[in-house]
Length: 311
Image 1 (cartoon, one colour):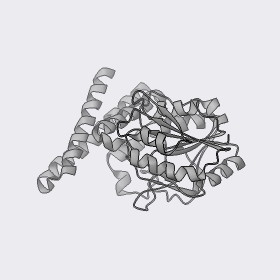
Image 2 (cartoon, rainbow, N blue to C red):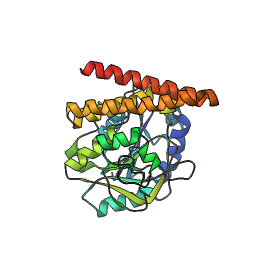
Image 3 (cartoon, rainbow, N blue to C red):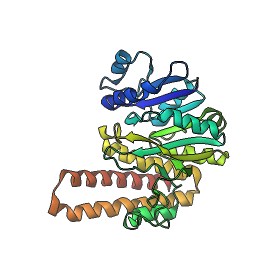
């Protein structure tokens, strides 16, 4: 088996079916297996997969085990030389698989490969990131990377300065589409299941790099990513989960002092944005503004509570 495609899904039925429609025409039964891991969806996703796509291996989880654990379940059930971990809200371009496999075959030093991500608006989405540091986290909190997007000095985490036109080794490939060499994964280990959702991409890429495997962005291949297929079902909860994941990353890879400093910067980040929304709300009074205020306040409450527990 050359390729194992693993798709973790939670209440994203329409996106999932569209993803499978793009994946299956590129899949040869002798070379490719497609595995869907469903995290206890209630929207009929697993039933639809079972009835419309009998060749797909469907794994029903009894609960929502999260993104990292769901992928690990799929990986353990797979046999492929290359693991294609694909979000349910991704549509794969024609010929994508062949190009990605050809690159991995030709570059045995590469452990993780990622394509260019295109949004539904036709624009290039952020496909790579740099490792988070206190400096680039502060720049993000102060929106300096938005004010000076071409600056490498302040845009290092989200790589706002990069035009995605060059194939090269990077620090982090965003987790909506990964090609992973099984031999490398067996050396590095599975995804860290302490990350429920978010943060596992930065952690895994860092672990691959520490094990001397290259993490590469391939500009010649692109895929469509709608974004937010699962997180849109509970946006406030998932925003807090993102904060939790970032904090877990800092606690795992940095000193306790640095992890505390990260929480303080995060408090500044959300505090500034909530204050800005509250100040401008009387002039706009939009539902989006109310949501941003609520989302920010919930993140602040989580940060304050986590800081108190850490003291």
